[in-house]
Length: 58
Image (cartoon, rainbow, N blue to C red; front, side, top):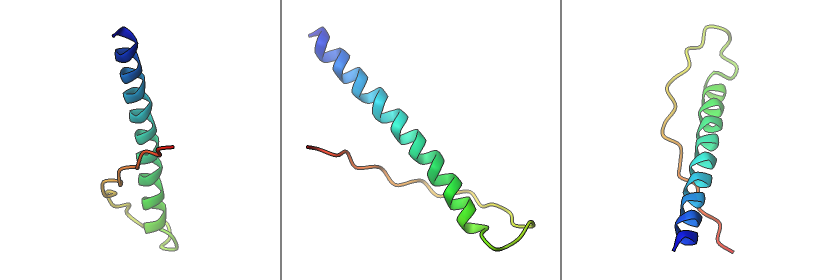
């Protein structure tokens, strides 16, 4: 029983950290793409909610 709880806890922590890194990169990329070629005076918009990553099942 303890092993199952530990495995489930590890799975959720790993997926939550992976999604946060993806969300950060998505936000930075959206802002860079929006301001591309507009010069210094570009005001970066608030990025939309990033898509949810699909879990890869083998």
